[in-house]
Image 1 (tube, rainbow, N blue to C red):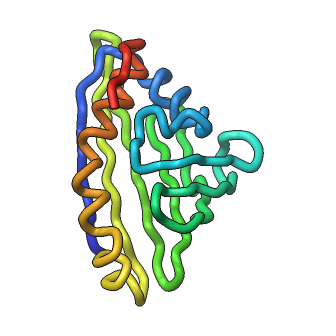
Image 2 (cartoon, rainbow, N blue to C red):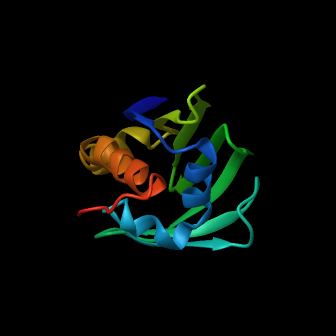
Image 3 (cartoon, rainbow, N blue to C red):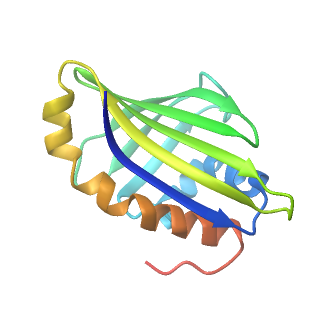
Length: 144
């Protein structure tokens, strides 16, 4: 397994605000500038599947592998010969806000090839994407 990126943010928004944004996948391009569109087949729930279209890349099928509302959201993109995992962990704070950590990893026999293809884009945008998501969760205007 290879770690591609890790990002974290402290937010004044409650954990639920992040899960509302993650559940509303059609709005992901507002805060994730590398994403053209996302479609979830059904409700935001563990086991749900969907398709994501990165800008300049092919459509990718994904699965919501783990979902613990208010705490954990793990989605897995199914690449040829590899699994790209985005692990989102939220820690509620006593003041009503939270910290959010997002780690992306890749595994599988073709992980080195996919790391070369994806390697620069994901680490370059991970922190900025998470900061834009925090702004949306807090109700602030997001600038591209």
